Amino acid sequence: MKGNSGHTNETSARERLETVSNESRRAIYSVFEWFRVGDQVFHIIMAVVIGALSGLGGVLFLKAIKFFEWAFFHQLFREVLGRKQEIIFLMPLLGGLLIGPLIQRFPKEAKGDGVPSAMEAIALRGGIISPRTVGIRTVTAAITIGSGGSVGREAPIAQIGAAIGSAVGQFMKVSAGRMRSFVACGAAGGIAAVFNAPIGGVFFSLEVLLGDFSAATFAPIVVSSVVSTVVMRALIGNVLVFDMPRYVLASGKAILLSVPLGILCGLMAVLFMASLETSEKAFNSLRLPLWVKPALGGMLTGFIAIYFPHVLGTDEMTVDSAVWGYLPWFMLAVIALLKILATSISLGSGGSGGVLGPCVFIGSVLGAFTGTVASRFMPDLFGLTGGCALIGMASFLAPVIGGPMTSILIVFEMAGNYKIILPLMVSVVISMGVAHQFSRYSLYTYKLHKMGVDLVAGREESVLRSILVQKVMREDFDAVDLSASFNDVITTFFSRRIDQLYLTGKDGALKGVISLMDLRLHLKDQDRWSQIHAVDVATPDPVAMMPNESLLDALNKFAYRNSSQLPVVSDPHERKLVGVIRRSDVLNAYQKSLSPFEVMGPEMFR
Image (tube, rainbow, N blue to C red; front, side):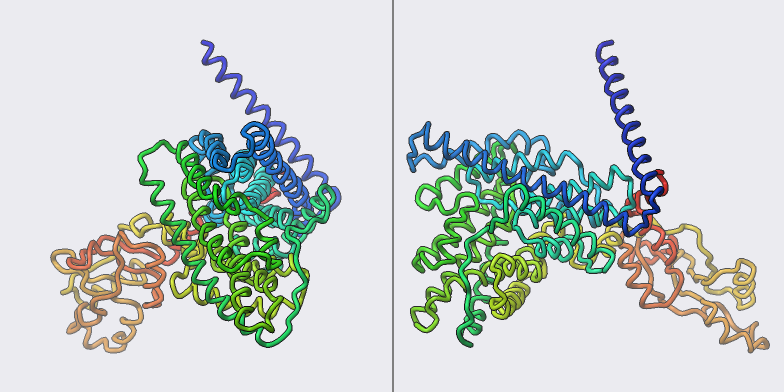
């Protein structure tokens, strides 16, 4: 009885919460109606709300990271353990143990880089993201980064912001199209707050998450990004992520130097993505509980940090040293490779965090390496190490996230110097071209590709590829025997008012198809109708579908033959006619596969 009572109380509480939500939502929409708020203004107002919440989320996330850094490295490592370098590996190990239970319980919300999940939600789930993602991702990512895990803070806050945008959209019960925009607004606000780069946040959402640069999408995302940045600066201050030198384009050699730097960054980006994939497969193959793996990854990362503490966390000091040219070339080369290894281990083991921060780190180190080596052979390039480090950031980041414009603008905003833009663009284009020779996927789109979601081809293709012909085809069709007379064919066409008639043999195999166009060629020869048979009029061996093919395959075959329907055969050998598929059925199936909120708008909940 107690169990039933508890269940009843829980149900009653949920119903009361839903009632309050409905009443609040109706009240908000009533205010909008009173002031005659239009659709675009409504969108902008919601973008302001999402931007403010994302900015607050970004500030809380940064504060949480600072708290855990203080707890692990100031209190525990320095005060309790006596700052002994040989036991520094305990910090990321303990961090992994703390987040392990959450990853075991909520792997989708807590594990790895959250950007692919947000992209999947936008592409296939109408932007629906669980609200609990905000809290879970904040805690797990803050602990992972604060304890020294080699991951970035930018991707987690992008997912946190996306979840905030989705929560606002779910509360307001907006359409799926509007929901996707809200998710992008939240992600832009998160990136803008953490990078202090509002333009970079805008283009991250447009280029990486949405792949949509339409005017209707652009305005609210800009508003959200700006509001989030204002909130962050009001609470923390206008703090630059890195202390950037003033880069001066001294000669044409500086632009030429961006060519080998772009090639190097493109190759290393491919290595980085391959390393992440290998690490993930290795940890997945281990027969260990899921909650143990982040601790194991943290311990391995910590072992590297005993001799190279640069790999821990985001380590902005190392980036500053690389940008200002304080590190020797051999140290830069070693640090870049070890950071790739440490990040692969941290993320592959299930640690919570992103790749944007590590990419900026690795790219700056590779750029500084290139500039340092070049200055040894060309002394007139001395002093350009910092500029090369900045260019390396964008050149390494672009192919990994698949966002060249995002990468260029983030670094441009951090540098605050227009003179960097020309070599920056050259290097990024070359880096993207080199990486594309090995794979057409970025790190994010490849993860989705493994899940069966191909955003490189486009959202529509991903949906159509996921639906098989057998789910949509009709089993009723019009067919006649090969020996049927022309009179029988005409009678069948006009009595049933059909577009196509199929010819089958005695075994039911598809032998041909007759369309109205085929009939018109013989209608004038009425004297010869008795001599003409169906096989004389039909198009033999027509293009056909099979039940296990996708609707994307069907659309491609519809393009071969401008027809309203295609026959469906059992297999390519026997070709037994089992049904037909219509072009209209394909379009209807695509619409139904979208979120049930796709056709719903605010007016339905007023």
